[in-house]
Length: 475
Figure (cartoon, rainbow, N blue to C red):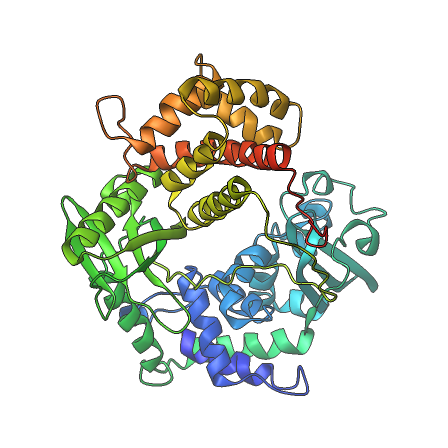
């Protein structure tokens, strides 16, 4: 049995399973997913490879997935289900659900005894998916074998099938979809397998189902994707020169993938952590170095935004759709503060929050510090204010932020650290300041400090200027 022929047969057997039947395109997508997960032979060169019973079982299980693209993942889940009560309580001593299907395809007596198999990939335990019920006849008596994920160890020991209630012991999701396969399904499928073995014929079609996969494989080859690749994907807001199409470039000793802006995605940089022998923070530093060079070359801005790592291929970064606060009844009653110092404090606070949100963390730290300087002139008065109010802050909310900041300080008093390692570090570039805004470790350090300085700045504005944070305060 060839994969393409099996797709046609499964399509025919599934025609009456719903008010609408599966399309050839949907089955092709399911089989593509199965190949992607290694459940079916990959590549055009393996097109004429005969399928094993385990591979045929995977294709059957792939029909259970609601979304065709998840067929491979669902097949892995269902193939590995284990019988409640162990093999003695299973259908024909099958150790897994995959072996149940193999038995039905090869053993005529098993097919005669079999009645129905019902499958689900709903959550049947906490963060655990998949369950099955096999109904069959044994010496004229209707029997049921239940299958659960292998992690449900307590249900796999002998005797646990006695009194097992799937509605009580197996359900975790408030709703679930189930797919059933009948005796007729397996009878006809086994018959097709026997005919294919007795009368060999070439695979259906011309192999065009592999065209898209081969194009994708070639695309990934050009982007430097290898087995074991693990990419860091970072969005970029910029006005520097950028390639029109996704491009692999060499930057110093590193290889970066640049992706262009589209209707749904921002411009982005991608680094293969495995191939470049980098961890996330080191790779982020390399990306920042690249953007700094580009900002210099084009004399324009280049801002690294959000990102993540872990994908085996570079993945485009979606445009940000940040949440915002709305109100059904917009109650507003505020006035411009009379005090020039209060107005300046609010202006600096807004700039600091803007900078903190948009990645200009050095500027955020400096502006939070400048707010405290409004009424504390000189180094020592500012230090005294930080020393006094930091202790009070420790007893209030955001304790996690404070504890992380204290870990940064080490043995240095917090008020000294804020002045020496925050204010001087970002405001100067002399021998006492080695702050490098490209270095990912330094960025994390400044973000940690900024979260605490943000709290202190709010405390200063509330106490010194008595400015309410209510939109309808009338002040």
